[in-house]
Length: 129
Picture (cartoon, rainbow, N blue to C red):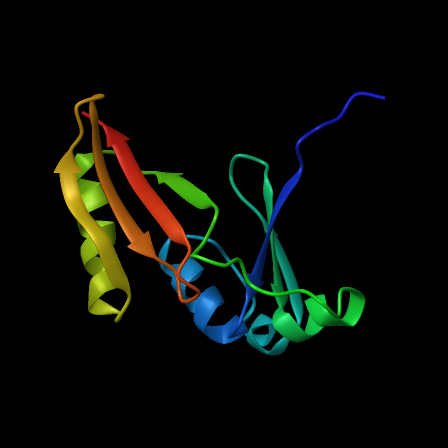
């Protein structure tokens, strides 16, 4: 059987806060999803992102604990152009989210920024220069 990458799962402490953050990045969720324990969406690229509350994860893995030492993964969102990296980073900051690394021109030829979601996961924003 050939494996096919299908989804990314994120455990969240506050579903409404997390979905609010990812809405600012263009992901679409129904307002009623804020009260759910499990929510999924498909990105324009075809990969699903699945969000599970801590209580849902504990329902099938009672010993689950968050990673020690900080998040072990990073998501990356490609922006249309360098100006969108700047604008998206600013929009997230204005909404009260942490900008871990302000937009900068990376040596590998991209405009890049790193923001933190409500659970401290790194989310990179990038566009080709």
